Image (tube, rainbow, N blue to C red; front, side, top):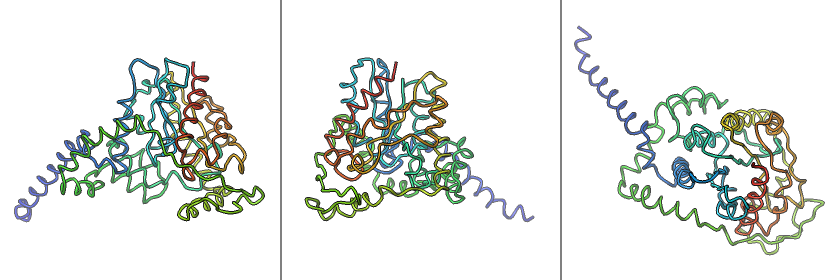
Length: 366
């Protein structure tokens, strides 16, 4: 009797669940929604990167894919690397995503090169010194925002388990199983202005990819401040805009700060997991994985010794999984004339770094 009374409600709930499941399968699991995701969002930047990488990868060359965050986006030019390598068989591809991390690169590579066989080499920026990064990368919450378009049902366990924070694990599980919920803000924005979104995700994204190919970097450069090497601080701030001082003050004061032991251990495990997984896949397929220390900042050459390899990256190198570019390969660029802010190289730094990077990779790649 009770079942008869509630049966219409149960049928309605069942129909709703089936409808939501169909929407989930057709809209999110086929990759359709990724095409129309907001290009300027974290998730949209990853989608854009996959399209750009596929577009720039050539079938008639040995491709070298360079991965990193905005330091590589601003600091590396694939076209200059191609021209400078003295290796006509090599073709460099800039696969950087601003704000990205090794966990993101792993899933990005799974999307663009599932067999780990499209690239002669992968080159990734890493911290050689495991004490530098004071943030627990294993619980970096933004990774889930970036990776939403690339996550699959089969990632439910492994992806969530890569976080140690219960909160981030639960958030990761929801992102895998309930993409409609995770993307509700983006969906609302799409529904409010669908034609604008279609333009942004169509012709505007193509214009962006065309612009990336000819991007030359920032022309601005930092002033050559008078630095007191005994204190590691400027004697004065002459020539520097007031708006820039707080960031650079933080840069100088943070030069010798180090992570605590717990963070060092956690980040070493993180590097082992994600850089190690990428390296194992490419090694099994006959490719090479290079790691390098990107120019660290505008006054590092003056105030900080060259990077020395340690921690999990050194372990991976000792096991033959990665090949390491010399720690001092790019230290000559750690000068204010090559930077436009505390982190990013300018036009001159971009050109010189791209030439040096191409020469290093070309000399190490058979």
